[in-house]
Length: 141
Image 1 (cartoon, one colour):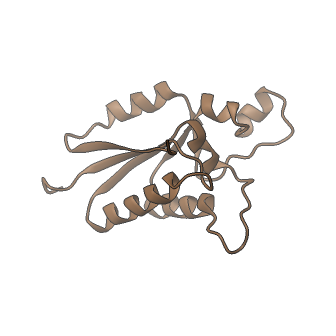
Image 2 (spheres, one colour; image 1 turned 90 degrees about the vertical axis):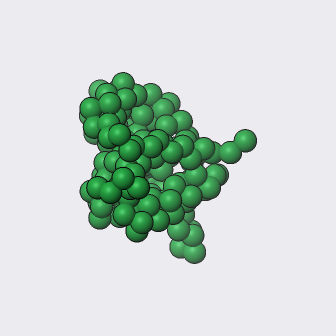
């Protein structure tokens, strides 16, 4: 990889439909790849975990940000993790957490995963590249 190319980790803390964070982050990720950079992973934290809900159903004249992100992640083989503490507080669960808490359903969209903040930090350290950058996309004021 040439010295001017970077590896980016994206952290999204703003929810779709109440902030521009998911939209701005996706635009950045697409532009970064077009410029020859790499997206290492995406981490959803706080209200950003709403992006991984398979139950979001916006009107037909609006972009479905969950689907747009899912398509992008799968097309480019980018892992995406929702913070488990943030997810559970906001009603986002995978099948494992559904069973653990005896909930009626799971709603984590593919290809998102749920993991602890420690797991994300550890994976970031293990795959740390000298040219890596962490970019935060916040939900607003």
